[in-house]
Amino acid sequence: MNKPILFYDGGCPLCRKEIAHYRKLDKANRIQWDDIHQSSATLQQYGIEYSQAMQIIHAISEDGKQLQGVSAFICIWKKLPYYRHLASLVYFLRITPLLNRLYLCFAKRRYKRRCSENSCHISDKQ
Image (cartoon, rainbow, N blue to C red; front, side):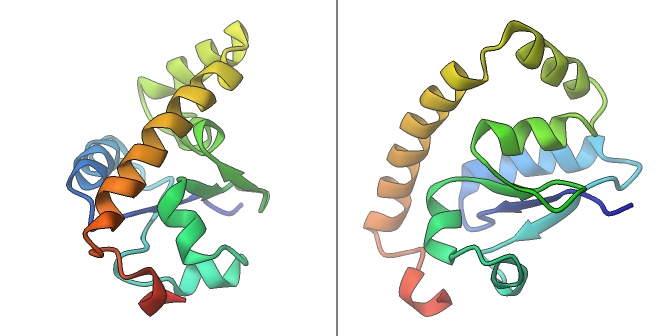
């Protein structure tokens, strides 16, 4: 069985902090953490453009399905202690669409702020 892959921006201080928290919980090494700031090679294998991954978090599920936004988070939450309960609750309450709208508002602001300083070098990674 394949591990889910989470693509994250390791050049973003907030993203690094959040992923460090998740990785600390991932003692069983159930998730492949892929820092797209370091390399976009795995993104290319899955046909995901660097600019897309910088704008919205992406994951690849265990069965190879490409996920974005809150669905990507839920994919990894299912593999993490404590967070697996949150994933179940979100699914049970059917609030994924609401959370995704909120996440997309956040992601848009994060991307604009992060890349307005030209520190994401999108043209260099494609």
